[in-house]
Amino acid sequence: MVSGDIPMWKPENVLHEGAEATVTSGSWLGRKAVLKSRRARSYRHPDLDRRLTRQRLAVEARVLSRLSSVGFPSPKLMFLDQRNSSMLLSRIEGRTLYELLKSDESSGDELFSLGGLIRRLHEIGISHGDLTTHNVMSTEEGELHIIDFGLSRQSPELEHLGLDLQVLRECLGASHSDIDDAIDRVCEGYMDKQSFNEDVESAKDVLDRFRKIAGRVRYHG
Ligand SMILES: Nc1ncnc2c1ncn2[C@@H]1O[C@H](COP(=O)(O)OP(=O)(O)O)[C@@H](O)[C@H]1O
Ligand SMILES: [Mg+2]
Image (cartoon, rainbow, N blue to C red; front, side):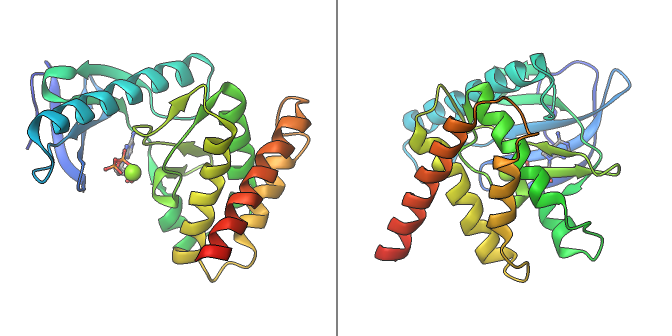
């Protein structure tokens, strides 16, 4: 089990072993935490690989710090171990939105709430880059948190904001096709006036761009 050089880190069990990262749960100074370690991918050139790995780690750490400073629901960065391409994050107790939607315990409101949360993220000035239902977690209380910011951007262009919705649309179509009009619910949440700022114009611009991208994909695909 990867423990790297993080003092006082007590690993318990591996939660996730993906192509790019291993996530281990455990505790750190008595707090529930996860260690996310990025792994080198052998098919890439080692120099390029190290650069990409380092870059994603740095991006994720920076974005998580920013999000926690504004109280956005995402993991808190507790420790950054750049030498081992690892970071220690606060553990979110719950399950992924993917699992929740697959279970029969979904309230039916999650996609609307997620739309509002994406709007809030965008208004903070961040695009996610990989918005799938595996990268959203739901706590026992039903609160949604967004995770996995390695492909996110600060000061994104309109295209990146539209793409967030398109990536989610593709995920919902591929993995949750039993939910009718799933992406429409997300968009309703995104446009909901109570969501956030009064900046309705830019939210409309994002949806317009998303619809253009979706149309492009449909036409060519
Ligand atoms: N802070 C966290 N708390 C609890 N579980 C987490 C946390 N971060 C990640 N996980 C679990 O590990 C999985 C992979 O983490 P993620 O950051 O999405 O890595 P990857 O880049 O490999 O997709 C998530 O889908 C989730 O199940
Ligand atoms: Mg992920």
